[in-house]
Image (cartoon, rainbow, N blue to C red):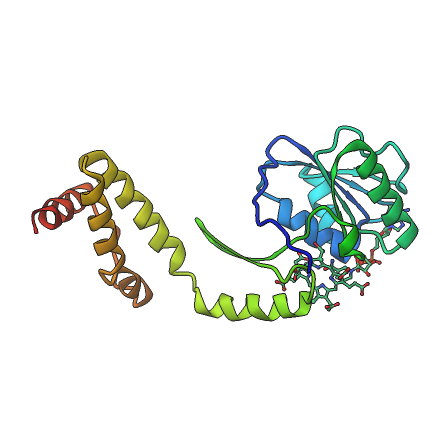
Length: 215
Ligand SMILES: C[C@@]1(CC(=O)O)C2=NC(=C\c3[nH]c(c(CCC(=O)O)c3CC(=O)O)Cc3[nH]c(c(CC(=O)O)c3CCC(=O)O)/C=C3\N/C(=C\2)[C@@H](CCC(=O)O)[C@]3(C)CC(=O)O)/[C@H]1CCC(=O)O
Ligand SMILES: NC(=O)c1ccc[n+]([C@@H]2O[C@H](COP(=O)([O-])OP(=O)(O)OC[C@H]3O[C@@H](n4cnc5c(N)ncnc54)[C@H](O)[C@@H]3O)[C@@H](O)[C@H]2O)c1
C-alpha cells in the first residue's frame, strides 16, 4: 500500500503551474487562491471562472497548448488536461526538472495528491484516502462539513487571542496549560453556537486569567 506524507506546502511567491483549463484545473486553481502563489494556467481555453481570475490578474493565462520547457522556474505543477499523452509529458518534464507534480488522471505517477479540505478560519481539516477513493473523500468531507460548523472560526479567533494573552501574562508552562485546558472546556463553543457570545474586552480577558490562575 502506498503511504503519502501529510504536509502543507508554503507556496508564497512561488510559481505554481496548472496545465489544462477545465473543471479539474479550476478546482486546483481555487485550492491555490490566497496562498500567495504566482498561478500560471497553460491551456488553449479556460472555464468562465478562470477567465474572471485571469481578467483580475489573479492568475497568468498562457493561451495555448503546453510545450516542453513551459515548466521552467515552477515550484509545482498540476497536469490537469483531458489528454493522457499531455499529462504524461508534463509529468516527464517535471521529473526531469525536479518539480513536484500532481497528475489528475493517474495518481500513481504523481509526487503529491490533493486532499479534500474543510476550512473554518484558522482551522483546516484535510482528508485523504491515498488516492483509493476520491468519492469516499468527498463523502467524508461533507460529513465533517456539518459536524464542524461556522462557529469554529470565531471560536479559534477567540482561542488565539486568549492564548496570546495567557502567554504574555503567565510565565509558568504548567499554569498556562491548565488555563488553556480549562478554557477549552468552558462552554464558549456552545455560547457561540447559540449566538450568545460577545467578544471579550481586554479587561474581561485579564479578569478571567487572574480568577482562574488563583483557583
Ligand atoms: C478530494 C478531491 C480534492 C480535489 O480534487 O481538489 C480529489 N478528488 C475529488 C473528487 C473526485 N475525483 C474523482 C471523482 C469521481 C469518482 C471517482 O473516480 O472515484 C471525484 C468525486 C466527485 O467529483 O464528487 C475522480 C478521480 N480522482 C482522481 C482520479 C485519478 C486516479 O485515481 O488516478 C480520478 C478518476 C479520473 C478518471 O475518471 O479518469 C485522483 C485524485 N483525486 C484526488 C482528490 C486525489 C486523491 C484524494 C484522496 O486521497 O482521496 C487524486 C489521487 C489526485 C489529485 O487530483 O490530487 C476531490 C473531492 C473534493 C470534495 O468534494 O471534497
Ligand atoms: N483528480 C480529480 O479529482 C479528477 C476528477 C475527475 C476527472 N479527473 C481527470 O482530470 C482530467 C481533466 O478533467 P476535466 O473535467 O477538467 O476536463 P475538461 O475537458 O473540462 O478540461 C480539459 C482541459 O485540458 C485542456 N487541454 C487539452 N489539451 C491540452 C494541451 N495540449 N495543453 C494544455 N491544455 C490542454 C483543454 O483545453 C481543457 O481546458 C481528466 O483526465 C479526468 O479524467 C480528475
